[in-house]
Length: 116
Length: 113
Image 1 (tube, each protein chain N blue to C red):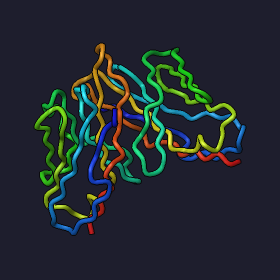
Image 2: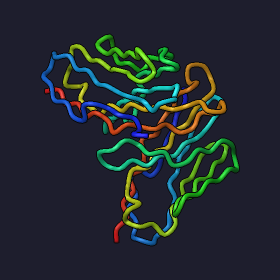
Image 3: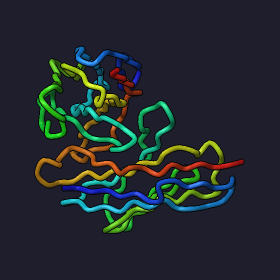
Image 4: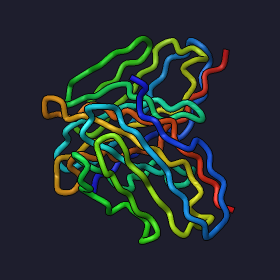
């Protein structure tokens, strides 16, 4: 298994532009999570999906952020318009409920976003 | 709201010098406590899950323990390759916390040869 695959690895964009981050979870995992990591705030959950359905988006900073999961093998996180304060590393992770108790997440390598 | 506090923020050890990292938590119905390791430029890597007080897990030089209020990650005779950020997280059972991990800020461990 190739693990959780995120693209791009690095993204530099100008303020006001639209940014789309992509994630392919591990096949068979029924949970998908989007986290943001900064030095100041650590890892923050933005949104998570169960069986492709958004369950909790209370961590999404504002309406500029949106996430979709059109099928079990693909998810996107979109920022429109982007702002310098959105600069961070964005991680996607997936997990499986297995026997009913969730195991550890498998994280992707992240997308380092810089908004100038 | 679930909360996780890790200490110390940073720890510098000499190779072979054993020590412990602390993770204190408050959670509504603990379903699991998780330890991760994160290397620079990479995503966190899962190490252990602990489910109930008194449980212990071991992996090479690492041993994780759990009480009702905190968890410890003990590092025995560390090597330079153990240098990383160690993250603690909890999975709660109440309300909207179902299914999502809450992470602490992490402890940056540096092991000098």
